[in-house]
Length: 224
Image (cartoon, helix red, strand yellow):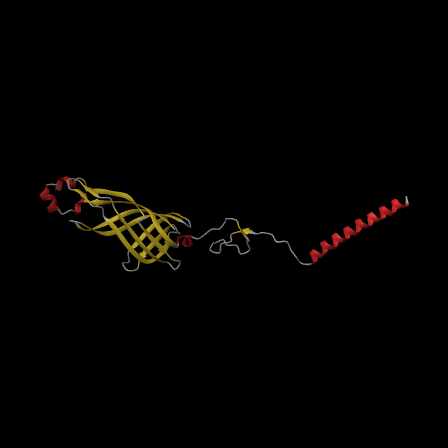
């Protein structure tokens, strides 16, 4: 019986000693000033308008200004165009000789539309300067009784300044040399993709006709 009590006392002594040790270690960690690290979720991209300097893990919530998204080097991967050719500009003397004055007069104008791939590029900088190269050739113009006029080559290089208009829903390009303007509505814009719509006015030399002003409706698909 005495041995039993000795064993019981020894067991309780070991138990209390262990508890005291755990308590001492816990108090030691607490007093050391070590605080467990907790991840903070938020936007970690410094270019974003909602950048969180305290965030340690990005949660995909970053949002960017339209101006920031617009800057960069863009390739015009696809271009859709639509315009019309006014038959009234054809020299009346030519039509009289062919006896086509009254016939062609009834047509008024001829629509020209189509699309082109890899039609140029735009490069926009944060200082609001830009350079652009627009290059494509329209479909041939089929003139009744006269046959086809070859497609019109449109080659327009420009540089100047760009700005956002109408509460960032439009983008305006102003050529520094010619003082000409290109205004496009922004239908879609992300970091890698843009869809713009607008009107481009170019002066074009047409064989046998001379200079002709074309007003072209454009839809531009751009990718970085």
